[in-house]
Length: 151
Image (cartoon, rainbow, N blue to C red; front, side, top):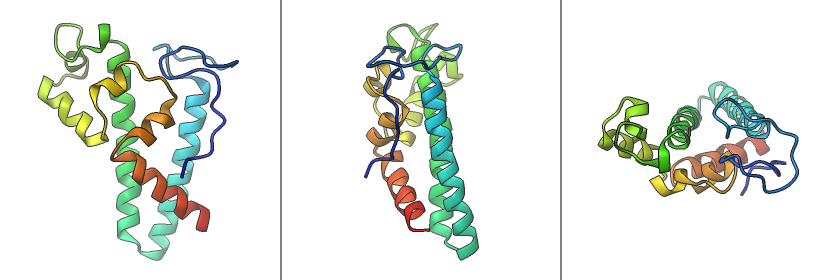
């Protein structure tokens, strides 16, 4: 199940795959469409979280928190990868330096969000494509979206 979006236009790497009036942020890849779509996803998460609190569903509460935390990690990683030459992990301009982590720390963060370095070096889609590509965030987003549809 995919989260419904209207995200034609600008991809996460700033290239265009269609017409878009979206402007990007100072990093050059976070578009208005990306922000709007993530805001929509966060609103869905909050609705599901509220429902989970009301029903006492601790697993659902945990899933909501994990997805929110994963989105923050994804944003930090994506920002660091896009601002590093060739998406290098180590070196003076590498992702690890930008995040204040060791090389192994970056790989741990990547594992936490369920992505590989190649997924973030040259992402071809939008932010939600990365969420769905993720081995961790994708299933969480799908479960919360299904729950949101039923409440």
